[in-house]
Length: 339
Image 1 (cartoon, rainbow, N blue to C red):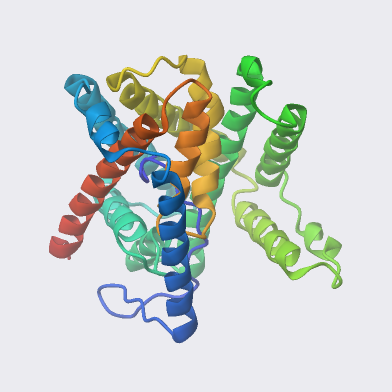
Image 2 (image 1 turned 60 degrees about the vertical axis):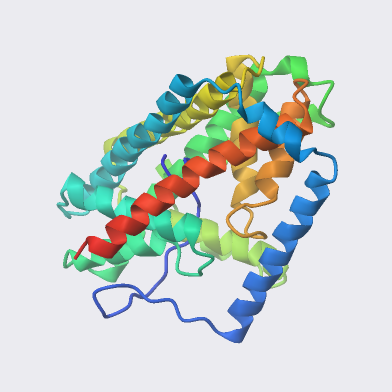
């Protein structure tokens, strides 16, 4: 997965810029939202840094195992391969033939937009735009990217369920643990049903009296089902794409595990299947700039369960974020020179 390596779930833009490169104009409301996100990120960072020592953070990085860090970083490129294979498969299911080289370039540029720019023009819109540039309709471009991201969410939900069932020793550390199990199970089953049993009748279930926030969530699910209707006769394609999504998410978990091992954290491998998907879900909440603040606080909490200090957890979080920034810079270079 190589968005960071987390996959950022975002709804693609419904329109594209007519020029050779995308643009992202901002209105006052959008600017105010970005300012609010920035302020919230600062607040979360202030909160966590109050209980940390900067010299201890640096000290936690000094004994890092460099070969393990290099191995972890290389897994990002494994993630690129899995992501591109999934996207290419979904495009082919719509009759769109795209070269792997072109799709890898698009993924790298999307990574740049997702993680280095506080922009409303996200990486998914970049990929949808690139699909459209191949001469296909806007609808097909959006559906392919939406399905790609939705399958990533399904895989992440399945891993949350698996991780929770593997981590019974943590039941005393988490409140309402059985509800976590039940909720993740319902989510995994529900999302799989949306993928493999699309039914347009769901739209009629949404009552007008439903609160706006629930309406938005409901419409998102309906759009997901409508997207999958394109693949109603291609269940094998969806199953293979879901398999790639699971492999992608496992690749992400191994990535984080190697970084933790490089910092000499004594945490069982199976525990990463529990808290890494949860952290990724939390980082998807669009209330901060690129997850800054949420990332640090989430890792401090979950790693703290295993005896990792706040300063060590921040070292871990910032190291993973540094790798994200490096990938974003590489994507920016591709964006500058590609046609």
